[in-house]
Length: 78
Image 1 (cartoon, rainbow, N blue to C red):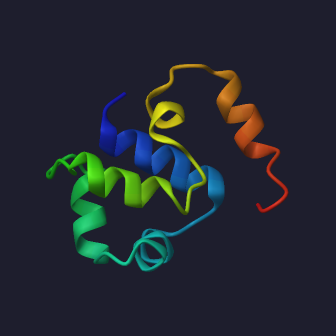
Image 2 (spheres, rainbow, N blue to C red):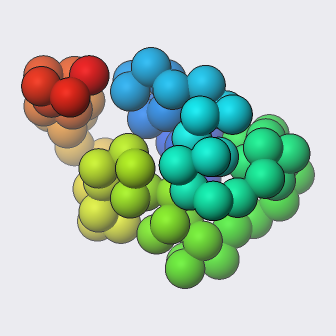
């Protein structure tokens, strides 16, 4: 799975729209959409900004541990 797909995956697990996540990150909705469509590649710094409202570290973001989704879904903030 590539970066854009991972962002979309975790955004959907949180129940966030593209607009909501973009607003929480302080970035444009169009930029986030382009990243999710794999038309743009975010810098590590930008990826860190996107991961913050998703409550993910960069290590968790890139982890292929399938248990992470189960833990993420059990978050009391969802």
